[in-house]
Image (cartoon, rainbow, N blue to C red; front, side, top):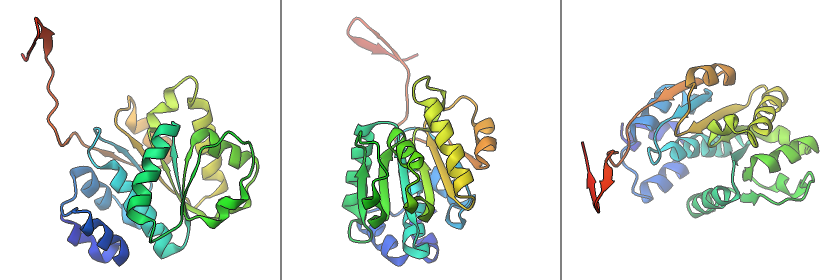
Length: 221
């Protein structure tokens, strides 16, 4: 599937940005997500290898929600370093289209200033704090992206993430939810819990090979 094939389904401003970035052809997971209803606000669980294009799946849905439906987008990650990485990417591409901010501080508050922003990148712990303080702007959220959702199995972060998702779905019954993961053990069960369509694909830009390093050489079977 080519980018031009979905031109009429996404905002023209978004198409122009992606075209400028040199994106012409969509990866398999992006094509599968679109065919599964990504641009029609269908909940999705996307489980594909690293660098297979999951972030662009999120971008397509977020910018459509922001520009066409005038709703907020929240991008939730497990680590501050990843939050900074995504913030830099989104700012580079979309700062002229919407207001983007980063919320990863340790201050436990409702952060009312976030009401001014369209796309908010934050850690799960920070967003949990915002929910517990009943930030009034939360009801303006139209889409939530949960990156690295396989950390639901993490002893430390898992419970917070599970409660966060549960509260979000109850607070916002019309929420568009997109969950992303490179690896997960029980994707069908998780997709069912999320009430989401499951997107599975093994394509990766660089072929993965397994070998044994011995005597300063890598031996491939």
